[in-house]
Image (cartoon, rainbow, N blue to C red):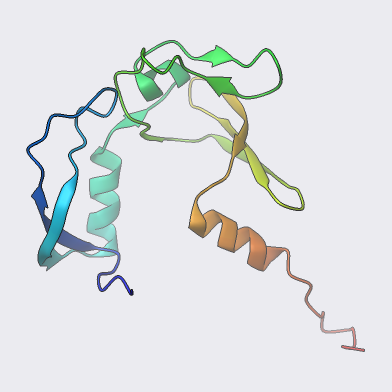
Length: 144
């Protein structure tokens, strides 16, 4: 099945009236897409995304304490303590590590906090990394 909509389409949904559990209290399951109501430009879309939930430090990402993983790298929150879904964050720096079957990232937040050893699961980032790491032939090299 091909998703018939594209970036910038604003869709209307038929939302479920069933109550939801935390931390995703604001999320309601859809029972179907009613259709696209309007399309916004890339500049408008970026404006909407910048007004969405954004955090400047680790604890604001989930509105609860964030703990270092003592058995390795990375961070976690207690599942029942989060009162907010994962949101966007502004970055001061990003460091990506590419391993044979996984990509991991470290993010530096405006607060100076670093979120280390995060799995990169975003499709666009993974495709970008895949294209960037493909072997290419330079202007001064032969294909043979």
